Image (cartoon, rainbow, N blue to C red):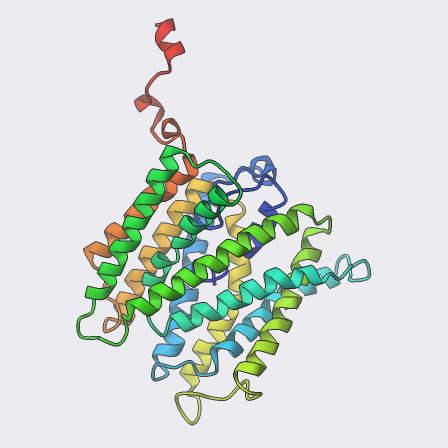
Length: 365
């Protein structure tokens, strides 16, 4: 569920095979796989961006609508929804492999269960978080994972953080704080939806999980020699297995028990199926699209998707979320922070005609 949960598992896995990066959220991607890949044309990039934004917005809005229009509860348990999403992902990667290379050369390894457990926990956490906040606010709160990941690499692994990146992290913290203020005041009539301590607490737990996932996947996939698709099949196979076990435990065996109403209405069934398909197939499609985009294009697209999600939620769920000026400013702060964090060198951010010449250029004048 992208910005919300597993934000780009596929691209992260492939990136870990290249040069290690410092975060999964605001990326500084220098992977040979990315630099060697030919960049698409402007029209193709715009098309990819449009598809990416549409899928991201639809995935989050439909997931929230499934709960919202079913008397405030998911029609089936959230763990069962995660289980179905993991099954869709597994089928999406398994079927192409079966019709091409086959499974005879596969070497199963239990190590792939480790990141699968982490992603399964994060996926469940996201659905739980929507009981306390809305997708737009969660999209901002979850950016705290960037701060936590950067500090973890600095403290534990001794990686240096430039002054520009420190400024970026401070702007990010300001944006998150402003989003909390915007969330707490955007719908005064609804006192039960913005329980910000719970939402903030869950976002910090999710950030910690994402940080662990970043470190584990960097180590695991950097040192594993299996083909990329074999890694993906094993990841989602373990993911489906773990999600199934957790769903059975959490529901005490009644995995698909109907909630909210005695029988599901046809519109709720449609929303539930759409949420599962968008969470599974849509999530993989988004990851594939992101791999072909430039870093800055990804950052702009992610920021636009947050604003678009906020606009759609404000229209569909006005009693739960209202798009106000404070929230827009918070997203803009995150956008600026993302660009600073990605580029590090301020001279790379300004247009060529605005950059300050170096000393060598001054001497040659």
